[in-house]
Length: 215
Image (cartoon, rainbow, N blue to C red; front, side, top):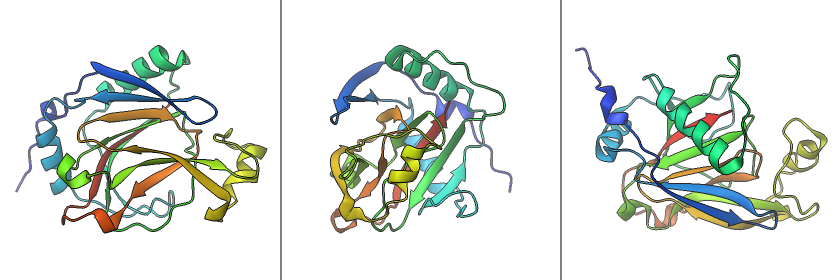
């Protein structure tokens, strides 16, 4: 049976925007409420999508489903946010393709902080607020020895901090709790990881997000 997908269900808007500052370095998190116009349809799609492990590409503990529709509008949104709120006017290069995907977690252990090899990351939680109940979020960290809250990818700063897998050497200074259909957008060089308190997760639905990684 052929499954037909209407790309209009993924329509999105950048309207209700809030700028938040966290940490000693005054790092920005951009929050966009009501991102998808039809969030329930996006959620239904995400719940029915096929997910797989991609261990050859990265150490993500969850499962990935690649976005199959042209992601142009999301790239446009990311460009608008990085220019408007981060004053970053660098153009995207054709050989550095942004990534758009859905991510699904059925279980998760303690996650050491990491940075991404792109400039910006964003995610939209697709669990309802009743499911989320402050049990899911994105956590941000500070290294105790160096005091660093961010790094320069592929530099000595990354080597000195990201090779430290001892969680006792990190302070979790902020959790941005997830809210249904709310985009959070931030610089990927800040130390971060997924937060999921599974003991407070009382439903059978997995932790589900829409993710973007852009330049």
